[in-house]
Structure formats: structure tokens, C-alpha cells
Length: 116
Image (cartoon, rainbow, N blue to C red; front, side):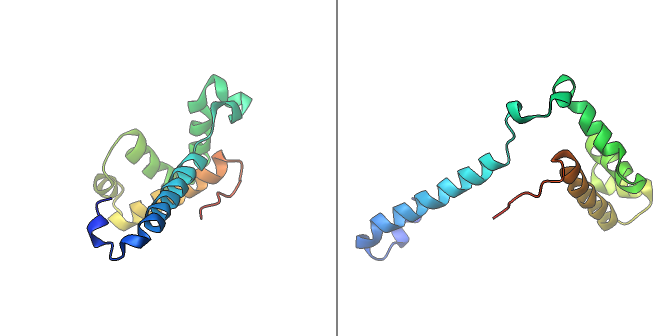
């Protein structure tokens, strides 16, 4: 409602509010589609959910795995990871992006997300 003063035609107020409502509903629905309820987790993952993530990280190529471990596990900033591995900063960011994509496929059993 911050942009109410920009509304030129007050007769269009209802349509304007409905459009905002529809957009917010879509945002909520999109956010909820990314959440996996505990009941849908694989049975083998329930005992130790971290275990199947660690196993998935272990399947990554070494270059990607090192970047993931240093950045996400050790908490180092990407600039520091780049310095330690003696590669450009953009290379570290690219490897992390590739690793996230590979992990997403591995952890969702290869199901492609519908991002619309």
C-alpha cells in the first residue's frame, strides 16, 4: 500500500488490490513449494539427515568439494577460499554454483524443480 498515492484512477482501486493479493499468493505458494515436509523425507535419511548430505558432498568432483567444504563447512568467505586454492574469485563462485546444482539433483533424486 506504499504506492497508493501513485494510483491515478480511484475506480481501479479494487483491481489494483486484487492484483497485489494474487502476486503475494503466488509468492507464498512458490516459497511453500520449496519446503519438503518431514513426512516426505526418505526413511534412510530420518536417522541422520546430515549423513545423506555428507554422502552427496563426497560424490562431488574434488575441485567443487573443496570449495563447498571451505566455504559452507569451514565458513570461509569466497575471497579467502580463492586465495587458499590459488584460483580467481570467479572460479570459486562458479564451482560453488555447479556444486549446488549437482547437490540439488542428488538430494532430490534427480527431480527437476518447477521454477515458474
